[in-house]
Image 1 (tube, one colour):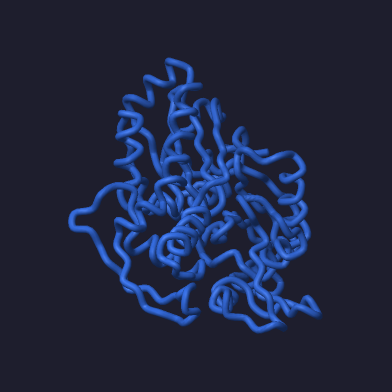
Image 2 (cartoon, rainbow, N blue to C red):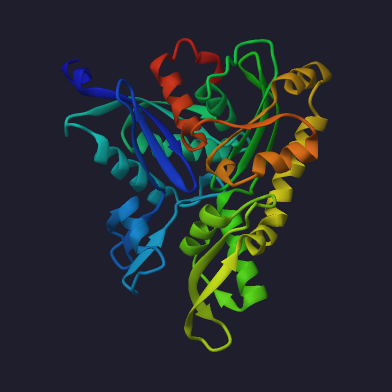
Length: 336
């Protein structure tokens, strides 16, 4: 029993783009990219998280960088396990610390097989008890909603790999819609647009910077500009180009429209009584994608309902998972 004094309870938001870790009694202790750098021949881990991100798209032939999650689910089981293990090691205060309970959030649309992969990875990383919670439910708890009430709340959680839309009432998800469009898809759309329309080849990291700095879903006043380095596809030589927020908005039009269309589909399936609650309370946007300028305005324009961006949307899911971890008996009904 002495070992239990050194045991900790951990909540993990295992995201396609970023992994956030919450430790009971300590709060959020880590927020790092979900990426691992490996030696190609020995398969030995060289770096994890932020250090591996620095190497991404800059490696030589002996090193490869892998993102073990794709579209919100584990694509590379072995590397995902290593990622969890190494990130937890970064935040453990003592080598003797064991993990007693782990709460991991998962996309609401994943299969039983995919859930098993998450559970197995968590157990192999050292957790004795593993609980799973749906991302929209965790996001709702994280932004302070009372999910046990007989009242409808609509959450749109836009992560790196998926957008999770759910109507929540009485500790359960009444209607959900999960599409594999998220921050990564927005980055890819920017890469493709500049390749196709401007003969400029840019990397994913540059695309993400463009999205964060000048990306928008609606017209900006004033419109923004940004200098970008890329390779000219005609001459093959690296060039600097100035790009505008109008170009970026055009690049993002398709994936942003897909997110808005999914919100409409979810509303169309919502029971009328819960629909009237949403009319009164509005739609809450969470996740990193919610920070795209004007996305709330665009969705509001399409559905004619109030739309709000949650405070600190990037950490909403891990904060909710952490709240569940702090009081598991209270939230037992939302866990699997």
